Image 1 (spheres, rainbow, N blue to C red):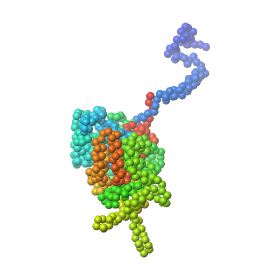
Image 2 (image 1 turned 180 degrees about the vertical axis):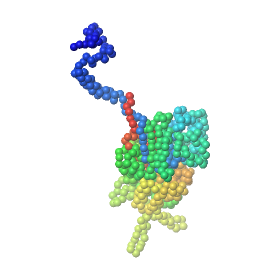
Image 3 (image 1 turned 30 degrees about the vertical axis):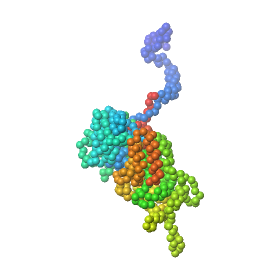
Image 4 (image 1 turned 90 degrees about the vertical axis):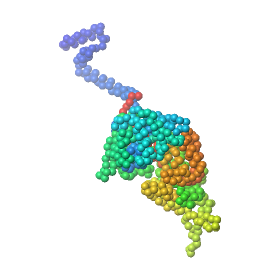
Length: 620
């Protein structure tokens, strides 16, 4: 075979002493020219086998040296119940939708984490600078930008505080900062001065901060009507993008987009869209039709109506529902034995299981036990005395009396042994017994007063509360009381509550993560605007409440709360019922949600910048 000169030279060099020298680029280019077609195919086949055999170990090596983590991108859509009015943290607390969105759009000095613990937000650090614990200083982080890229400074915080304190702006937060002095130390340090020590004060610094340069020229009269309330500028993880309204001007949708300059890092999810619905049924229907990733806080009896796959996120709030006795409005309720019997007649476990579908925690005292505990399951552990009620065990045993529960039997015994009996009357057909218990009270002038065990129960028109009210009615009528239920719309109920125009009120109270029950139980708070709904007055309890709000040692505070709990339950001013477990369903594609204990429904969005949809592999 004839070989061209270059190839001859190449073969000649292979026969030389340079045989072991690594081939040059020139030689590599001619390598395949000396192979015939079969040799080329065979070589390609071996290369292919080598490639295949390398895939498994290479893949294994790659997987061992990388881990799956969140990536940027994606969109989250939530069905939210209600309608927003003011995306303004000074006005938001009275509306759930406003409060939820404000928590995402605005930052605050401090906030509660997903376990309910106080954490830094816009503040870099804080300190108490005097021994009396009346002066607090906070330093701001220096990299905080408003959504219009201007810097957030102490001037914005002071502006916000003074707007909250100004009664002309009608902020629901005003009472939390009443009497507090605020001053600028420098551009990034602020000082708060209190008139008296107040241990939960730091919780009052979780308000959203307003941008001074946007709001300073807007007078009080125009404040609730300002365009900025629906096109807000904040400093939180997401910024306002768009709002859509229907033909009647009602807001149907709000879209937010991730803020790339957010001081805690750009959020992983690019956009958040909130579609608004009038009730749970409408929100559930939208979820079942697809295209919705989450529903804002469903009641337990509606969870079963969800038809597509979902993860159920649960968290407990420092909130409880109870039936408050107004002894001034019904003389029968002034009898401690009546209040005790009404307490014992209620099977709380049955209320939780039948009405709340098991998604609640039974409550026996004004300070729920789970507040001071980090709990990760549905049943909290306990730090405060678990059973401060000395009579709560009275109804825990079974009874052989046909048709009567242990609770009913014990409650009836208490009433009968204390003079509450059924009256009898003779008629032509015989003797009849009234269905309502009564008690005859003898007076000094030998006249007699007949008290009937007739009570009226007021509650708000909300399905779970109405169902609970009907359960209480049945339980109390089983022991001989006559019960009328008055169901009112929220606005009408609020007016009756302010005037204390109720005999028994079935209602809820929110305590806060660092509870200060002063407004709910101190005798000075019996009249509006106080929130002492049971009109409770006890000098020993008053002293404890005054001490508790100044106590800074957690263990001492727990011990004082324990004493306070025992005082309350011994007087039976209330039937404590349950604390709901809040249910937040989301589709499985939404990852990174971690909830345990929160101080409000909007706290479910704490850490939303770490939620994610898309993933990628990161080198370990």
